[in-house]
Image (cartoon, rainbow, N blue to C red; front, top):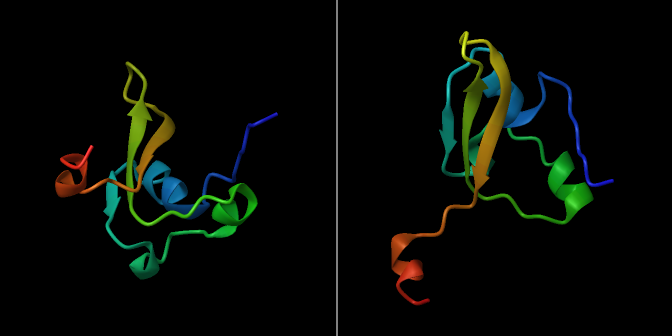
Length: 79
């Protein structure tokens, strides 16, 4: 099972889910909300986070979605 769940008040996702406001974290070392626990169990190294709430058609928060470790545009040109 690859499912990883967390409490609603945990990490950047929890900080976004509770007030329902998106967050951009350009350096996780400067984020009070970042929780390194999940990097430890997955082996992933989070550097940057873009996180936004997912809303139902009635504007109820039903989840959050995260994009991790944006690649700089200059690096994309190398591919």
